[in-house]
Image (tube, rainbow, N blue to C red; front, side, top):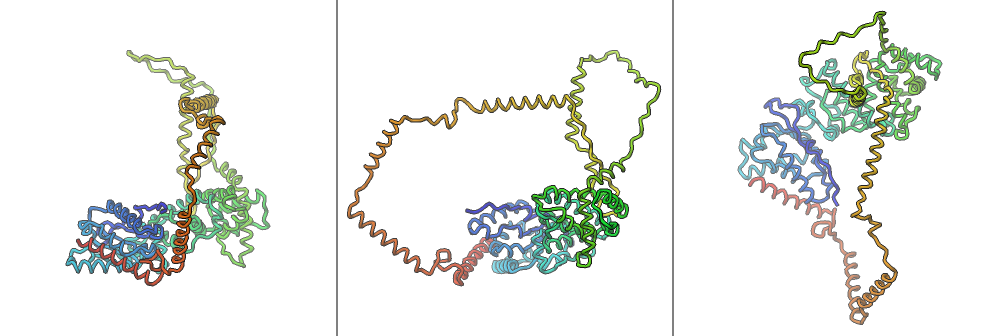
Amino acid sequence: MVKSIDVNVNSIFYKSYSVDLESDSPVYVFDSTYLPAFSLVQDKEVYELLIDGLMDKVLTKLPKEPFTLVVFSSGFTSNEISWVYGIKLYSKLPKEMRYLIQKTLIVHESFFAKTVLQVLKNAMRIKGLNNKDSSTDGIIHVQSVTDLANYLDITLLRISLNVYLYDYQFNEKIEVPEQFRVKPNSIAYRQYRQLIFDKIFKRLKAEGPKSELVFQKPGSYKRINILLDVIERNHYVDLSQWDIYSLGSVFLHFLKNKSKPLIPLDLIPLPLEDDLNYTKKTFNAIIEYNGYYDLLRAIFPLFITFLDNNETTKHTLKTLSKSLTPTLCKEKVSIKSSDKLAIGTRFIRNLLLHFYSIIDELDSKSAPTLPARIISERPINPPALPKPRKSSPTRYPVSSSSSARSRSISSASYSKETPPSSAKSSSIELIGEKCTQTIGEKPILEPPSTFILESRNDSASSLASSQSVTKYNLRSPSKPLAKEAIKDNNSDTEDDEILGLQDLLEQLTIEKNDKIKSFDKELKKKKLLQQKSANSTKFSNEGYGDITKGSKVSKLAALYEERLQGLQALNDLTK
């Protein structure tokens, strides 16, 4: 039975933000790496239906204006898709739509792309359709993503990780023309890096406590280098394609490349002490030196959540502090620096233990003091009420208690629905030398009023009563339960039924005579002969025409069948 396959059409074909430099037409991308592999289906008929359904959905997304098409063809090779399906994909395009394609850039030229293009050109030439308006003339072969950058701004393309991994075997670093580069000190470059850092931080907060040994397990070397290269050239990227361990390594790379170390080893006085006062004094000296208090205040709670969920993360104070020391102290791991790293590991361990008590005291000191209330000696009289008009509206009596209750309920609901604005406005400052934004204090919730408690109790009791009523109503007397519907029969009736069944069985029994015995012997002989012939045969039903699967003849038969299918697709194309 074929398993369900999830295919996202928006990942296969989409409109990019880039524009062709020559024709000034919008650029659309066809990413073949998201096509389902044939190995997932293992059935030609089902796979053809799947490809046809995908192409029908892609056709609905095609524009009605001239456009440039970029095809990442590496998925046809990696997914072992036959060239016949490439012909079928092209034949699905209406003739009017083929003329709208101004240019086709085929990236990562492969045997698949060469075969499909050559077959199409030969078919057009044979049928006399190779004219100047033919869509096959505007096809350009591109060896890598670096070569593609010479035709358009690739930083505006949403290139998938699969394409990057395939391109990595040719070029470890993608070069972009100078006209598309962003200056490292520009505002756009800083904003982009800050945005990437915030997104990685959110992923770590969501998935880090659910994963094992984040920051200790290194991510994939290729994926980390690819992502760092993407960030360096300000490339549009989808971070959901990277795993949590690769993102954790990139996150540490951000922290390590700060202009000053977050925990300088030179500012840790010796001998080391593990008490709160020593840790607090050292931490105060550190934040006065580098000015990274807001950054440390944001990232250390993330580290502490890993310790709180140690059953899942498998992190202890020792493992976490040891994995963070080279990054926070900006020190390379080597035999010479082992003593320095041991000092940093011990201080970071103490800082993780006493962090909340340290920042609570610092936040209380930095909080602005409210001005004292000035009480005047003379009582302040309320302002005089305005004189009533001639036609004053009628005033209905409203009890003060009900209005107070409504006001308390509305204020309580508003406080639950709208969080404090300071929490929204606060963000992590990564780029500047000194962080200017401050994270607001945690709001102190007052105990609820007596009326709210009474209303909660009343609502709880009403809910309990309503649930009991619904449970009572769910059991309808007209429809009895299964246990009530089954009735016990008397023993006399059961004995009578058993006797009746035995009489029927005795009537159905057939006396064994000589003819039946001889017929059974003949059947047994035939079965034995069939088993011997099946064991002695050298052919398999899985191949072509009882040819053994995997042999040279079977492969030639498969190629011949593939060629027939391709010719049939070409006939359909040129009709």
